[in-house]
Structure formats: structure tokens, C-alpha cells
Image (cartoon, rainbow, N blue to C red; front, side, top):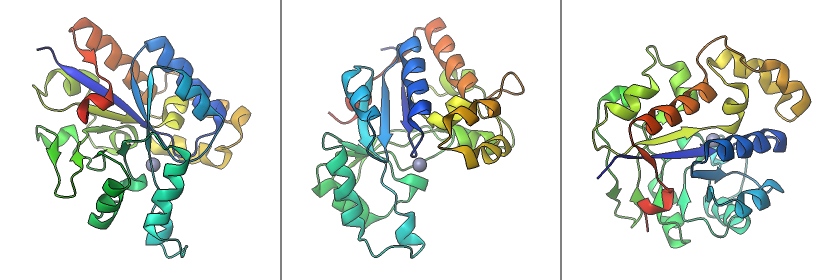
Length: 238
Ligand SMILES: [Zn+2]
């Protein structure tokens, strides 16, 4: 059987203009993408009409961690599941991971999670496994912002061709795809304009370094050249 890779994205409250750019890019590449949703936006209608996309939830528990809310973690899950009732997969914002959250999510109908980031540079071959909560845990090995922070930057070719049959899940953020983020300084300069789409354009990386968008484009090229297919995330938990 040929190798399959999976593309996921955490939308992280991105501006609708940024999300529209992602939709255009995904359609041009013609690849399935699992979108982890943080908030209600008219773009959810666009995602739902577009067969490239599967929707999951990306709940934010940082307010609980930082003591900024009285809201329970169950309430955070319930509110986001009301926005994305079809979600069967979860990745928590900032990769917050706790047994009570996993158990609650399973009870609310979530079947799998992608909270576990184990980078390609670890050298550990990844596999899905069953957690005692009943969730299927799907570790992922690439994240665009983490890659930008790594000392050496393992290439898209290495990620795809040097991982044998290991589970190959990539995670991007629409903002980093839009900016083509190659280092986090670029992102921090742009961040004050996160919801001013017209202004964000002046922060785009045009050939100043190998960025997140370049990485995704290269994955597509390398996959096509090596008969590697892009899988739908739901294959991993159905
Ligand atoms: Zn996030």
C-alpha cells in the first residue's frame, strides 16, 4: 500500500480574509484538509459546502489555565460543539492536554484527538493508538510555527520520504500560510493587524525565506512525484 499523508489546520481566530485565502489555496492544491475551528464565522458555511474540508474543534483552555474565566472546561467544549456539532476530532489550542478534557470530549461525541505533537526531529515513528478515555490519539509530526522555531529545519522531503510507514500528519495555521511565515518575528510584527486584513498583506514573506506556504506547496509537489496520497482525516477514526 502506498503512503498517505494528512493535512490539518488550526484556524486560531483568523480573519475571514485569511481563511478565504486558505480556501483558495486548498482548492488550487486539491487536497483534503481537516480544519480545527476556534469560533463561529460565515466561513464555516464555505468550509461545509467545500468537499475538501472536514471540521473539528480547537477549544481554548488558556483562560482556565491563566485564571481569566470562571467557565468550566466542559462549558468551553459544549459551546464550541454547538458551533461545530458535526466535529468528531479535537485539537486543543496551545496543545493543552489533560485527562478530564479527553474524557469529557469523548462523552460529548469526539472520537479522536490530535493534541500530541512529536516533531519529526525526534526520530520517533508515529502510530495512532487507543486511549483509556476511548479516544483515538493521533500524534502529529509537523507544525508550522514549531518548525520556524527549530534549530535545524527538516525539509518537506525528509518529512515525507524518511518516515517509512509512520503516521504523517502536518499542521498549519491559515495566518502562517497567508504570511508564508518563516520566522516568528514576522508573525509578531504582523500580529497587531491580525483582524485588519488589508494591512496584513504588507507583512507577507515574498521569497525572503522558506516559509509555511512554501512548505505546503513543496509537500504537494513531493507527494505527487512519489505517488503519495493525501488522506481524509476521518479515515483515521472511522
Ligand atoms: Zn491554536
